[in-house]
Amino acid sequence: MTKQKEEKYVIAHSDVKATPQKVVILSDEECGSSCEMFILTARQNPNVLVMGRNTYGALDASNIRTIKTPSQQFTLYYATTFIHRRTGQQIDDIGIAPNIRLPKPQNLTEYQAEVTFAQHYLENRL
Image 1 (cartoon, rainbow, N blue to C red):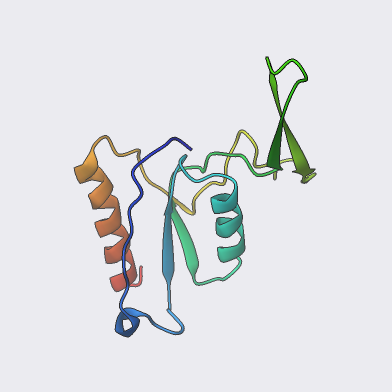
Image 2: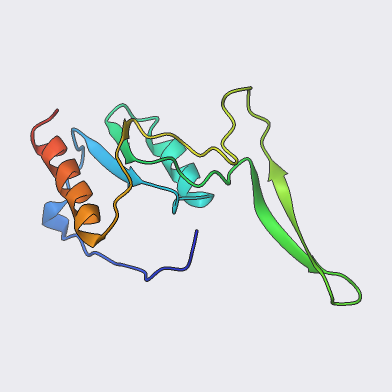
């Protein structure tokens, strides 16, 4: 949820499988709101597995709006949507737990090792 450099990858049509046997989504605390909704939707498919760390935890209260006070000295932030989940299923301030928990990488090499681990997991159908 912090400002980071955006990375883009182009996947060639020939590399895309119509029905992959397994999909791994790597997640961590940088995944919030819309990203969390994507994970909740994707993991309904039994072929999807989430690896990494808990997501940010900003989905139950969402669609944030802002308004300035008449004095312009304060800004009010408020949610226009709130989802009441069952006890124990809340996402706000907790996040979505991964299926496979990985330790937090300390540097770029360790982040790349996560990707390599996920690839190894998929290739070996673990």
